[in-house]
Image 1 (cartoon, rainbow, N blue to C red):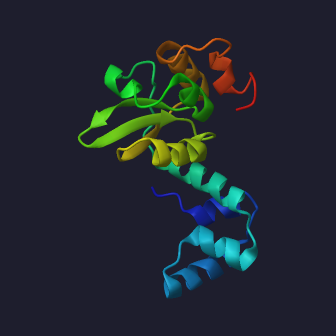
Image 2: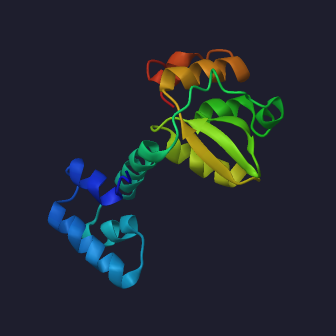
Length: 158
């Protein structure tokens, strides 16, 4: 089942069902992205749209346990340990020409932006529970002062 961005925004109380329907009507006429129209027509903040989009994407993306995935050591070199922790992302392996990258719903927007700028391969994201990602980052990108709790929300803000 597809999760629609407008439905996420309605569920969160950001827009009303009538506003969602108005955006959809306008979208059919213009072909513009739903989030862009929500910003323009109803002054929904970009950060709110991004957060709702992350929830939408996470609801459709494959869930993995990065501790159990077959991580290709060569793809780990695509980012350094500081970047892995800063953006809470773990490159896992190539599936054909696409790089599988693991993150959490909370860090998806940041990880996606960074990957688009830094990684010279097409990426797709899979989602993990924060603790599992934190443990995997600790294993593959050990860094003094960093622990699984940093991803799970109990450590320093990221």
